[in-house]
Length: 135
Image (tube, rainbow, N blue to C red; front, side):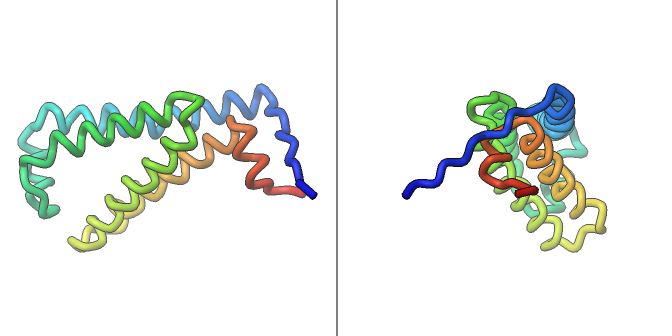
């Protein structure tokens, strides 16, 4: 006996809310985090040194971050992108906890992860079928 979950079609309001909520972390990951890693201003170099990372890993981390954000922004690969970004942000949380950063620095990656999954949940019927919040 095979159970088949019928995807619940998404309303236009939920779809657009999901797109907007999903765009926020993508824009933050690309323009506030990945691009500065490519430009390497003094502030980024200081923060990486404070967090215990050497300068030679900054470019690689920026490329990884940009690639994960792009994979998330493409509708067909958005679930994989959300999983990759969750791992990336989990590493960011662990790094900030390790160095004893204040709560805000620890909370921001958690908030981004919640926005990533919340936006995806609103716009992707496959995820809603997999994780129904109502029966």
